[in-house]
Image (cartoon, rainbow, N blue to C red):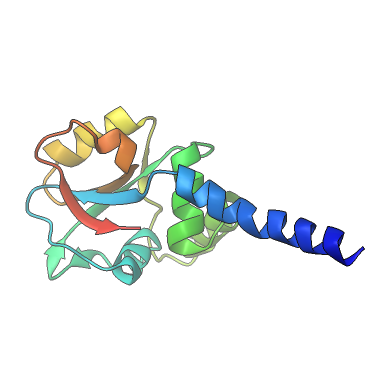
Amino acid sequence: MNRRHFLLAGALGAAPWARAQSESPLLVIGHAGVPRVDAATVARLYTGRAIEADNQPVTVYNLAPGHVLRNRFLAVCLQFDEERYRAYWTVRRHVGKGAPPRELTSVAQMLEVVTRTPGAVGYIDAASAAGQTGLNVICRL
């Protein structure tokens, strides 16, 4: 019986590690002039608690609700799920503390908007960045 518990615990413990190894890292990308930032600053930007990166105004962009990368980003960077993130922004908007980031429908649109819009910040996975030239990676998550 102890051996079964040990094997089950080992299998359950390895599952998150195996999943994490198979997922491509998340990259926070910015327009050419946006400086590198840490993960805490990214979290403040996406929760509306900061609007600048190193004294430079930025505009953050999110992928649409339900997008796999958005769900990963919310979990990894903010420790939120979709419901909690929406509730958070509902309260902030109601008390007059801003609006949630504009939502884009695809990674391709995210790449286009961020590379063409001064001050823009968004996120993609490293696999989507393969072959892209001139990307400004400001943070790795």
